[in-house]
Picture 1: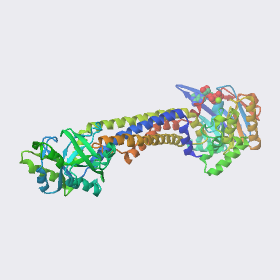
Picture 2 (picture 1 turned 120 degrees about the horizontal axis):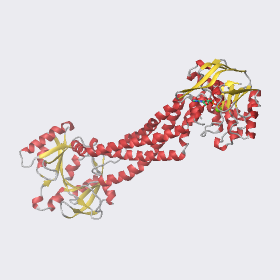
Picture 3 (picture 1 turned 180 degrees about the vertical axis):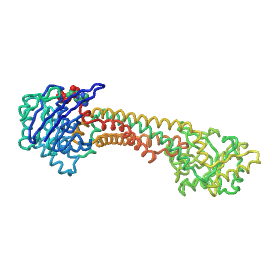
Picture 4 (picture 1 turned 180 degrees about the horizontal axis):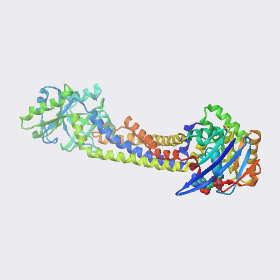
Length: 220
Length: 388
Ligand SMILES: Nc1ncnc2c1ncn2[C@@H]1O[C@H](COP(=O)(O)OP(=O)(O)O)[C@@H](O)[C@H]1O
Ligand SMILES: [Mg+2]
């Protein structure tokens, strides 16, 4: 599902060139649930962004869902993200002016699905995360855990192949975090989603089938 | 929900800031509409000036008078259809000393003939013609002074001293905007017979209607030429040219108004620009999220411009909603009633309203162009990093 070959990622900061990922190789099988751990600044988010098609590798090949992301145009990458990737961020990132249902519906606005069907699909996704009774609530009326569950519903509404989650439990208390992790496991087991999750939390990583440790741009 | 409603909803995001901007813009729109209306109401005087009327006055100054017999000469000049005359009376109503209104001594039948836009009922007309002390009063003036047909009014003469008693014979309106609806017209004979012998048989000015409006200039020249050999020479000018020369005198004021209008538009642009760039900056992370979900730079630009358009439209509509009561019914009514001879028709023109709304919308969008370009050009990761 995900194959990275000799991936290098550098950033230019003024005159200085920082090498964040230094010739990385990794394969993630379809249907797997893998965690990415490592100290702060080790390049976890950078790696996740490459897999998700948010950013481009400086060199090497990034192949996701059978497609070579390194040769795509910006427009192709946007279409790729819309079709194959579901995002979960640490700080939920819901639109405050939209209700829970509308937030979930948001990715479907890029499709040709008619309005009534969009609503139905968004409602279904909310049911999967157990928030059908909060459909008309705005984000500010929800707890952090509930907001993150809405974000998960948004991530799965377009039925993506891969879900990428960057510290999805980082802002949550233990109980909410456990609910989110249980939900991710359910998506992996019952809905066959491939999940790549960055985390600091060993407890969170224990839910994954495989854990990669990143340090100074290389796997340990 | 759709892409447009998402953009529109962002307008109500920061209620306090949005309200201040909308209110500020609305006030600027009112000022803009007011200034534009001053100009358009002056232009109305020019555009609606009768094309077929010529004013004839003393060559030296309009305060000097012409002999009454000149009217007959004018009537005999080729191209002249009919002619009448008037004397500025300068009357004041002692009960309403602060109100200014034009009072003129005229020859009723020929005056109504030359000023055919005056609409008066046959009964009022007969009554006015028959009563030597009769007066015909514009409906706006009648409303201002609370005059009704049959009332007796005493005016104090400023040019012709004394107390002058009149009977209100009729009320007139107008069918075109070329005549002011706040004049007080009475019989020239009444005035002429009551003044000392040496002041008699003098007229303030002569007004002629020409057969063919296109020959107005030629006829004017012909009239002036006819009096060239006399001891008192005349200066003739079409009503339109007179109004134009008045506009010419006011050109400094008009230029100032245009500059101020321009400044107001600049203020609009800055108000919108400030609000939009603050809003866009605060929302950069959301644009990053949208991009991550697969939305394109053009969508982001569209959201921002759509939001700006909604803001501009809201502010423009509110500004117009405030302009009508303030400019048209408040100040406008007051101006018409008190300075009707200069601004006979102080109304917000549809073009002015459309211009104000258009500018509000356009400047709202224009102010958002740079923030929109900046936000849409950010890379996805840069936009998202604004959170951390
Ligand atoms: N856009 C960027 N420009 C410059 N440096 C960056 C950029 N993105 C990440 N970095 C740097 O790359 C390193 C790894 O960042 P990141 O992948 O966010 O680490 P992690 O998620 O593991 O904490 C850090 O030193 C960070 O400062
Ligand atoms: Mg990170």
